[in-house]
Image 1: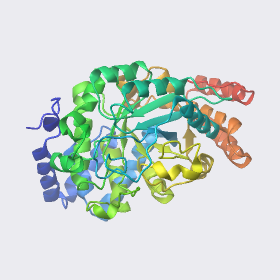
Image 2: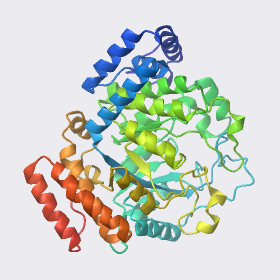
Image 3: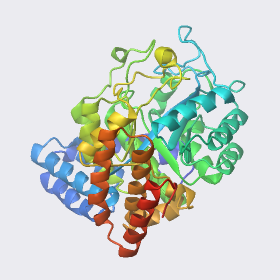
Length: 471
């Protein structure tokens, strides 16, 4: 029975409730009056239930879909302005004991070279990332009890935070590793991680078990309840997501929003981020083997409706997506993107062989500087800000500020100051000039006069060589 306050996976992600929601959405998909009323109600930026959001996703009326898109853009603007947070993934190891049929890291794959970074190699990788200008990383590793134990992850985090190269520094390490225990989540919290990220892949239990036939990840309940254990371990910034293309998209969309509702109801704090990866080819994985891949149009609608339904959450898109696809979903809801990414182990220092150990094929292969210039040309502010995490504005404290619309008082000047650092230390001359012009324009949009005055002073100090200012 559906119970969003339960900590049991099959109760807060109830199969029958999803089926009933799909049936209700099908019954009402042509009810323009109802759909229009939901769009109008969502203007208050309080979100929608999973069932209401599914109805919007199921609507195919072109006029109403355009109204949804316009609303998604307004909500995105209200919460995030024109800021886009930048990050890069760092793959530590592709050793894995799981049998996930959609991932080339699966244990039976004999064609992919296995690689695990030593601490010395991590230093080289992170130095290369710092030389690009990155300040925020997402650690990735396959699940392997002896090759990738929690001690290795913790040691790697300590190494990363300890690397100081020129003006570079990684200021936030997010972690995307396998579901683990409350004790291990507590250790990750003590190590100073930012967000703990774990994708559900699919919320359909029967299909989940088929897609994960062997290994620890085959335990649906243990995997689905991971965020509860993370919260219990003190990690109040968690990131969820599904891999669209594994299951029918409306099923997983509904499960994703039910998971967000559960975290909000149970812990008073919904997901810090929601990721929307799509299935893509890699090594021995061919998307033609899967029946549920989705079109760009459906993908865009998914992003827009998630933005409407969960307006407070950050939304992440990776370099799985093409430049064209990323450009469209940026305006509809995405607030974080990767740039200059390598999805292979050691890919930042062994570029000539980086595809050999990739988890998935990178569609957007531009450098970070090229991505920054592209964002600037589109009118966005690329942000390397990590201030909230470092100032203790996490979990319900962060969400409270976001929901009240107060976080912009910090975010706008922090984004501009970190972008100024990028301009001074890493940008090409052409990109630097574009950054200067954008900062001159956008600093005037900092509404609090005292904060604006301090930010202008800090921008001058950055030009003179000082670093790391934040509100």
